[in-house]
Length: 216
Image (cartoon, rainbow, N blue to C red; front, side):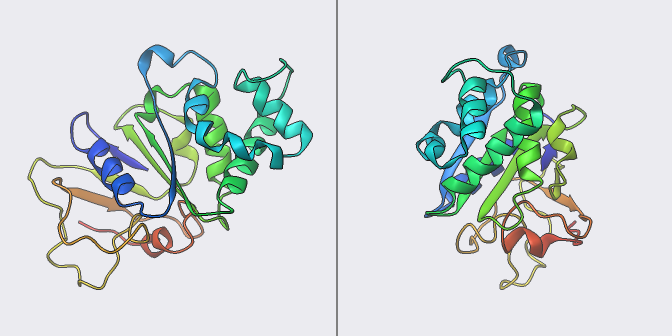
């Protein structure tokens, strides 16, 4: 979870992660204010690349997801079923290659989408899926309760705090496993808060290495 004031560099960090995703498959969405009241608008954008894996879902999950995304007959499906369907679809999509799930401007993501993504993110512990979410500091989102490691972007200096003192062989949190450790940092200062034991961002290695660690 990347948090910070408007214009501080959250989108730049997401773009950096996506650009260095290498062989990973990327699914992404950006919250927009005028769609914040449209149920599942964000989920529709996020899951489009993965819709080819829909046939791997159970019939009830496939029907609920198609209905929510406006791709099938309208049915009543509770949040648990929709969240489980999102989890199953992302997991199925990650069977062929690791997946990077990136959300920008999460404060404007419609609530239905945010809740479904948060439900899935909390349960993507054994899947090769990384979840990176950027949200404006001070604004709310159901994704804030997903248990993702917390990275707070702060400061105006054009440097990445702690870079020069961290050993070269030490992977960076949250995207150390996206590819080789970069030789230069994104142009922003950041600090991260320690994360409680047991919470990762869905990555099998990199983000777990940031657990309980604070950089400043």
